[in-house]
Length: 242
View 1: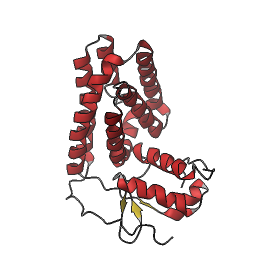
View 2: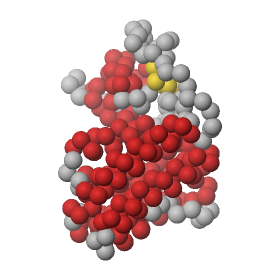
View 3: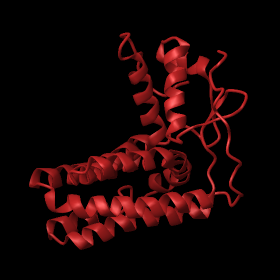
View 4: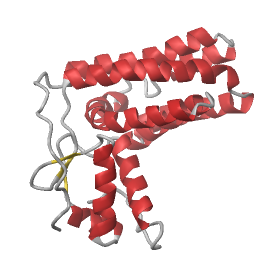
């Protein structure tokens, strides 16, 4: 499992270390939709026993980032248009509010950081890793959302992005060749967001953040399978056997 996981050591921090690295990997689309994750393979990748992996998977299942079947396997959720639309409705509402609150509180240094991230994205889009590009996208948006000063909003946004991970994987497979060919802007609407912030037009900044979400949604709707919502799975018995 070549995902760049770092070995985790230290009795107190092992579980949290595994959880945080897995959470980030899911958030940036490192796993395919419907991909099965086994405790044994993850424990080997992290250099740990099964227990911290099992507990990390339980926590991620509780956040709806993973689904646990009755046979005990952990699985990345499938992607559907209905679920995509539901997630994007929530993202527009929550992230739009966080942008509205955060935009006026961004400093000149913050805006310079946003400009550097956007420049990095454009460079990465030509010849870099699509997952590095996704991580930069997260850094850009979260810089704005953190400025809102709302822990509640930020926690909700993290949860939504975690559940959006499989769609980022789907998107990355679709847009990577387009970016290499120079036919798609690697930074989305980030330049327009920065322009609105510099103009101190915070209503426009919120609109551009929302447009960034809905533009991605429209791209994904064209490639997302139009299938019925899967039946919910039970995970009460997950991890009883290694």
